[in-house]
View (tube, each protein chain N blue to C red):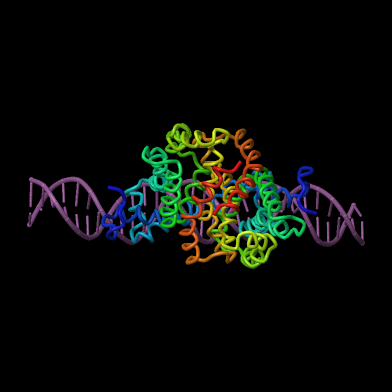
Length: 203
Length: 203
DNA sequence: AAATGTATTAATCATTTGATTAAATCAAAA
DNA sequence: TTTTGATTTAATCAAATGATTAATACATTT
């Protein structure tokens, strides 16, 4: 039932939403004009308000999807009882690099917009509690009770997410380009877990 | 000659610029209205155009400063002939955590706006060449010729910068708050170099 | 075919927003 | 003191923008 990119969206409502995803994601809420979305969707401007009431409401629907895409898969992996700590690390790295490679500006979009408005979805998810009680954090504590798990989590996600956040800058400086960036990210699927394990051993 | 936050800015021009720094940084270019800046500066709206011609030009002046603040100190440290590789790592980590702790939304602001417009300042700096010929990268290559320096650099800066980019989200989830965030960042001054060195040894 | 409800369109509104203007104020020079 | 140029202000403009409306087209039911 999740979104599948099969055929071109059939209904007008879905055409608008798909255009909104594209434009909001690229330009952010404030820089996006409803006329941009209407044009991108190939529909009359009035239909946007007809189906979604307002720019704000349409944005919130898109934002909810994007938050889900960025954060929704984290807890399941962290709580997978089958996996060792090392396997969870590998799973997180591999999963996120795949998701972000397919949606490179997802993290910048979500993190930026989260900083501007309060999204109750995130606030009410109690991510802090859920994560700190997760199997992942328990295993982390068993392995290194002298280490604040938050530091480790920040570092892992820093290594995973930061390149995508810095991607436009890396392109601008010539540090990478579209093609070499993809290769780099694939290399990181192996490299980041190796480094994460080294960090776990470091004293 | 650099900016010092001594007394309250004297001239009208500086009052406007200081207000612009504050508002642009918090809301970004598109969400900022010139009237916001005028109000923040306590001046008549027309003075903004009198001194800076346009919102765009004022923004570019602020942006240039912020880019300088974020990227300007990198190359000097990377080329400090006095320092070993380990010392450079320690220097970069310590310096950036200090700068970002004093300007938590600097990286989000710069990276986000860089992704929207082309800033020739960054493009013309040839950061890729300068970095790849730096003493830092040379030392990195000597130590580990099997390792692409870009990966290491991304990871170090991921560990340093990512927490600041994710800060609003971490606040929203309750993962940290203003106070504990500061403590965490101070702990990272010691932790990140330890981890970076462990990564250098990992095979 | 007629009736009914849904979807779409072109035109228009009201506000917001970046920018300008002409007049007023101020300070320094003559 | 008068003059001159720079600074500041209130008022206003034109364009952009989110949203609405009234009319029209379309499809489905009766």
